[in-house]
Image (cartoon, rainbow, N blue to C red; front, top):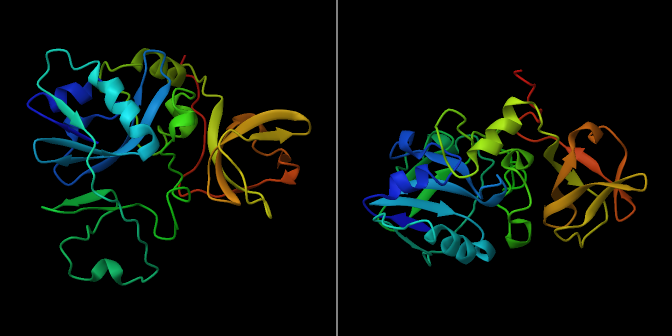
Length: 257
């Protein structure tokens, strides 16, 4: 999704959890767009492009998010559209790959190369085999407006700028953080032998649903869970769930009051 125009930066500053005004030309950052209740409408990877910003998000949610954001343009000089360019993800276990003299491969994590026909972003984890292993939830349409961004770990990956000032949903998001009321977190799980986990599948502790699958590629899945039950015996479709490590530590904020 491309957001371009004279007012693109100011427009997104008031719509996203990320502080886009501090982004340099080669920065790539995670961000969320929320409604007034602080619920996440969409998450994305944002970079600067000529005359604006590009936001990478799942195709299933892109048109809804373009339509939603467009309602807030009013008199701003902003144009929002879906770009047709394909996305390619690749990974390398070659330890020397970073030293290869290719200007289109950024040397530092979360840095972007923006060329005439390609955008390349180096993701932070060297051993992740996909976005889920990075601990990143680029949510699909069924999960839109279901979760606070903290439940998707956006604050743990630098996706929320708590000192940036006002944006849509900011009051509830900040209050939840500052009062230590983050109760749910996202985890990476595996259920050995389960191949058909759909978004919305419940995760149980004994006979009580305590979490929900939000993304899956088969056995592995991201799920949101009430944090206090992370060390409990969990099951999905009667199969034990093993919580796998993420590239960052999953914690909950303490109250500052």
